[in-house]
Structure formats: structure tokens, C-alpha cells
Image 1 (cartoon, rainbow over the protein chains, first blue to last red):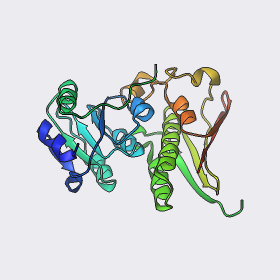
Image 2 (image 1 turned 135 degrees about the vertical axis):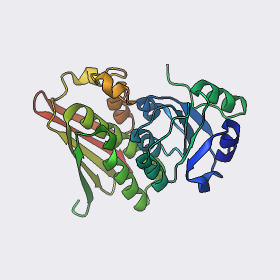
Image 3 (image 1 turned 180 degrees about the vertical axis):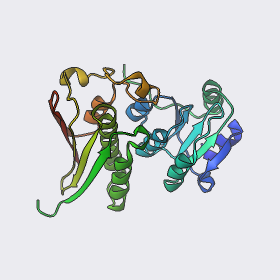
Length: 118
Length: 140
């Protein structure tokens, strides 16, 4: 799904890297625990989170994630926006909750990353 | 090998928000050197997890990344409290991180297992009260 489509569906505000709205994401991972993002994300996914600190951006960067969506109207600070800009990561903020954000994207065809091994 | 490329970093231990800067730099350097994206990702994840661990548990340390013909080697060294039970620490979900770290999104007990998963070899030497040295290799 194109990042621009995510923005439309969530009525999200784009915070940086608007020039990359044409890029695609193939799955999504919704989580406030960066440890799990580092352990389980496998493909070019969008990160949906309510956690706001620079480690969110660094985690996304390590995982080659191209888009971060902050839920519940959370807003990153200037330092985080700079870090995302330097690395071309699109950041957006939506007033929707994590649950509703996941539901909207899933019902529009964006699947989650693979299940965690049992 | 005499012509290996080495990057060295001091990892500051006093500020969690800046943790991971060395890993970001290494990722950049490896991209510039044109390595395969999967190799870069594995090195990045393994080093980032290790760097975060050094900041959480050991008050910082040093990181050294060497690029050789066959593999990329990451050496993380700290003078922290050491790991009491390495076998336990390697179990997914086992964590001694404080709640303050968990509220920042880390400390779930996934770090060491994830470092092992993303490297082709990993050795841990640790002495209580003296520190920890971890050597990871990712084949190219």
C-alpha cells in the first residue's frame, strides 16, 4: 500500500519526508515495545506506535522501515523529526487510537507481519 | 588481514535518548561501502541491541566494528557489573532491566537472543564486577 493511502485512510498529518509518500509498505506492526519491533519485524513494514522518543526512529531505521505513524495524536520533537528527515523516513500523526488505526489499515488490505514463532 | 577497515566508537552511558548513535553511523558507513541490505540489517540490529544493553546495564562502553573480506566483526566492551548468569540472560524474555527502561520501549529480555539470531557467531565473556565483552561476526 502506498504511504499516501495510509495518510488518507487515517486522516493523518504528515510531519516530514512528504517527498516519500509515493513509497510502498507491505505490512504493518503496531507496538510500543521497540524490543519486539527489533525481534519480529521481517519486511518493509510501517510502524504504528504511541511511544515517542528518539529510539523509535533509530529502531525503524535499523529495521529498514520507511514510515512511522504516531497514534493518539502523539507528536515527536524537533530532534526526532531531524533524525527521520536525515534518513528519509516518513512520519505522520493521527488522532486515532492504536487499535482503531490497526483496524482501519487491516480492513483496507494491509496485513500484519508474520506471526511470532510459538 | 592487514587492510581491514575498522570503526571505533565510545558509547556514552549517561543518556538513554542518545543510545544507538554508533549503530546509526555504522549502518550509514556500510551502506556507503555498498554491502548487501540483508547483511547491513543484521549487523545493525545486532549492534543496536548491544549498544542499548551497554547503556542500560553498564553505563556505556566501547564498540569496534571491523570489515574484513569474509565477515563483519562487532566487538562491544564495557566495564559494567557483568552478567551473572549468561545462560539465563540468553533466554528470550529474561530481563534485569529496570521499569524506567521498559517504559521507554526496551528491556523485554529480547536483546541477547536477538543479537545471536542476527549474527553467525557470538561469544560472550563476562566477569562480575569487571565487565562484559561480546564478539559477534556476520558473514558477508
